[in-house]
Length: 634
Image (tube, rainbow, N blue to C red; front, side):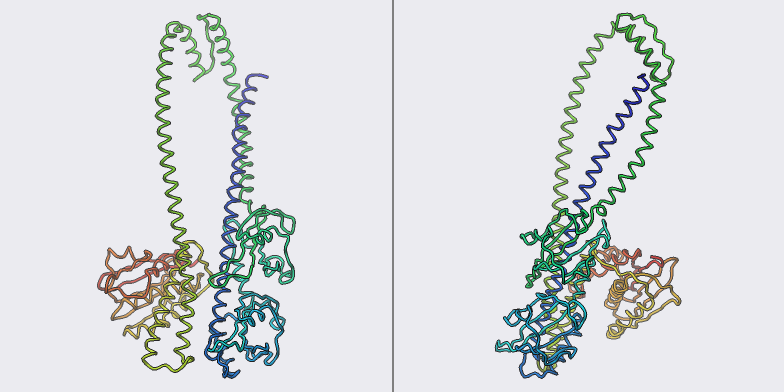
């Protein structure tokens, strides 16, 4: 084999030995990293989804307690008509139940919101056993209701007189579709919801919900699944690989029910499964693209190396022959090099080397010794610098880890505190409402005034909690937007009507200036209502006299909504603080209560999620104008 061919093969092997291992290890590393991210995301999704289900069930448990303790319902002397009216009130108030019923201890239906099966005896069931034993039954029984033609979750609570004697049972029926709605929200950046297989299984291994096995719901049982065996073995959350029912390998994650507040759970397990071919689709696609890129590169490299090798091979052969002669002691050899550039310079160097060899030998030894010493010094300096850099990197990594941990703890604390406040706050609010409407007895004017003050403060606290939860969702990227086509002028008109009484109470004129024929645009109606409500409420709150005006205009490819007031205005140095979280401009005794300083920060996040902008123009002492825009084509 000639030199040129050898050089070509050698260079090709070098290229392949470098590229192929890198390609392989990068592929394996990408799969491992992606699998870790997917399992972590799946575990997080199923955990938070089952937690939301438990929160929903816990709230219904709190509802049934409130209903069972109603002064009309827990009084033996109340008539069936009176009990029915209270049950209808609670059904309309909560807007969650398909029916509420009152039974005596013989399981005979006394009252029902739909008026069905009055006087009929109900068969004994799991939730009846719980209620008759004095316990509140929270979703311990899920079954298909023939009269409603749908799966139903049952809640039951004993009804006791003030003396503590149990004389009846309240039963609430909730459509299981409420739970389906929570489960169906699972999704991720690595997959779509249709790629996932989801199963919700109770403690008896009965399939309560399945995204792919609709006919098997409330019929099929699963005990051989690896996830179920691990859950029954005591694991609270986990993941792994397994073959699904279609024998296709995939990644699964499961979480065992852990309850919420006083609700300890019913032993349900939520399982999510995604096929490997779907999970690793980005890696497989990237590998294919790399392969297509690599083949032309290798071919081009072979051609370039072959041409280069043939060009320099003859000159190298001549230099080889000259080197042989010099090695024999023939320092008068003539070197014939027909190449240019470095090869020609190498030939000239050979000639000079032959002439100066004896003279330069000692100088070369001295130079080599000096170079070795300098290399050792530089190596030592580089080693010290490398160690210092590694120490700095280690400190930075530790600081980053602690910061991320602190942020995680903060988010968890905020979420936990807010959710913990919601349930007792709902009970307080309902209790105040019952007393105010006279259900619990007559209320005089002074008592009603104090109750009205308490109700306003409870409502304000609820708004504060909602603001905190909304901001946390936005901060974590978990806020769900329902984008639909809407008319912005209709929304502005509706919000304006809700603020008329508030503006009239302060003696302000509330005006609405709408541009005609504005196009319908796509946005989340509830969230944009929240933005406009917040801005308009602030305008009325900080305007003591004059007017507040809402204006809509089309600006290029955007719809612009503005709220103009004749209030006190904002100092120039304070404008940059307006959209900062937990920032309020009033201090001390001048501060007006009502918010946590999150309203405008949340509004900014919502508008920017819609690809719009929000800003303010203000002159201190003369009023302010808040603007936000929404794109015509989102």
